[in-house]
Image 1 (cartoon, rainbow, N blue to C red):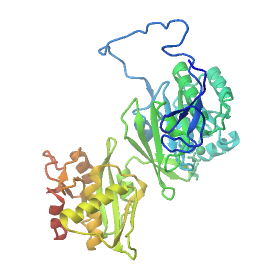
Image 2: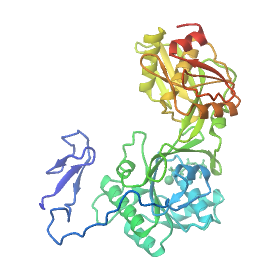
Image 3: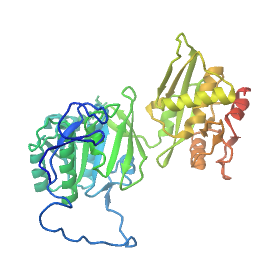
Length: 451
Ligand code: TYD
Ligand code: MG
């Protein structure tokens, strides 16, 4: 192997002969790090490797043993509980409530008999203890440590051998073998690698906390994501009390699953019926409001889409979106103009998902279009109506998955009618009056007498 140092861009993976502030290949700044040359490899000198044992695909495999925390919203997002020796990353904005969630989770696991260690690199033990007391968790048998030196932490974990170790946060951990500041890509990567290897070798489950910014730019979670088994993101708007724990990746369960919490004065409270909560603040019939019957993970969730349309004083009217993809809004506006003949030129458009949830399902299109039209025409939609369906570029409505689950959830919450794509019903209507629509023009004709 060559002895020349290798430098790699952490952004695009390009190799460089020497360090530079900016990567020529992808243009990213401060992304180049020195890689230690590999000591072994297929062509490396030294003794031959041993042959590995191979098996077939048919061998019966028992499902991995799991421990439930008793916090149902967390257990479901984990895929049914914590898997032994698994590595989990919990990412999120600073201040969103990661430490609170994990302290509550650690206490809950510990109370159900799991030996649990909580290592804080951000707060002193006294601070964590004060928070635990405020949360009413002081009696939980969690063992607490405040440390940032990974060497000391690994030695401690090796001696104590807990079932679960929470590391809060990976950005504060440092290895003395790496000459870089804590929080740098090199340190975060190395620390995560050490902890994940330790988890696998010693059978200790580890939960790593990682801070991200809105853009996900900060060194951390993104470089750790591929090393761990499970990636959970804790999301929410700072001004709202709702918090959503979302499984982005899960080797031991379905991804896309969400858990809903509410931040209260006494920590995070589980929200087992999110639809009721997201709709609870809905006022009397108002133009610009439409209820979307969505699916988040395995669960139906109803959310209110709100739109405001007003004449714009600007040359380029404003398009402001919270909780939805802004590209999707542009597409829907373009379809409304081109296929239904309803232009939004010269109008400012504001779109918002109430409650702070982020909706990513394409089936939200119809509810978005309905909210926009309702705001533009100043006509309120019936308050007992839900909508769902994806809008294609031709203006046609595409059937959505899990129609029956959506309708059942809506019926449960007192809704009596639904607008949905034609052909999505397979017999079941959950007792709702259904308006089955072939395309967006049919919908506008039906609701607003236009199109
Ligand atoms: P924290 O868990 O420290 O966030 P993170 O670890 O993600 O940085 O939570 C910080 C916020 O949560 C803080 O602004 C105060 C709020 N909070 C409550 O509202 N209620 C509580 O019981 C606790 C412990 C925190
Ligand atoms: Mg914290």
